Amino acid sequence: MTDLSRIGIAIPGELLDKFDELIEKRGYSNRSEAFRDLIRNELVQEVWQTSDTEVFGIVTLVYNHHVRQLTDKLTDLQHEYHHAVMSSLHVHLDHDNCLEVILVRGKAQVVQKLSNSLIATKGVKHGRFTVTTSGQNLP
Ligand code: NI
Image (cartoon, rainbow, N blue to C red; front, side, top):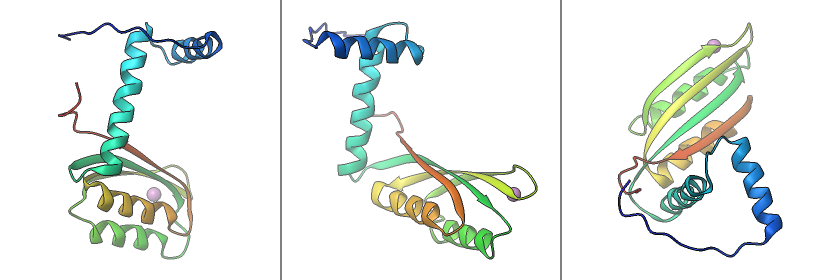
C-alpha cells in the first residue's frame, strides 16, 4: 500500500472498547485495517445506491424443491435476467432442501430487482443478497 495518510479521530472510550472487541472477534490485527474496511464497505454501499456503474453481488437461497413449481419459478427468473447472471451453484443439502448460490453482475437497480424477486419467491426459506464490487475504484 502506498501514499498512507495519518489521521486522528476523537471517539468516546466506550465506543472504542466496543470497536476493539468487535475487530478482535473478526480477526483484525489492528484498528487501521478495520477502519479502512469500514470505509470501503461504505463506498461500495454508496455505489450501490447511487451509481450507474456495473456492480457485483451474490444471492444465496435455501428452499425445499418439493414446493410446487418453485424450482421452475427460480429458473425462469434467472433466464429472464440471464444477462445479469454470471454463474450459479446448486447443492442438494438433504432429501428436501437445496442451497443455490447465484453470482450476479450489472446495473445496481437491475441486479437488486432480480435478487429481490428470487428471495421473495414463495417457498424460499432463507435468502440473502451480498453486495460487492469489481474493486476497480476502491483503493
Ligand atoms: Ni437440490
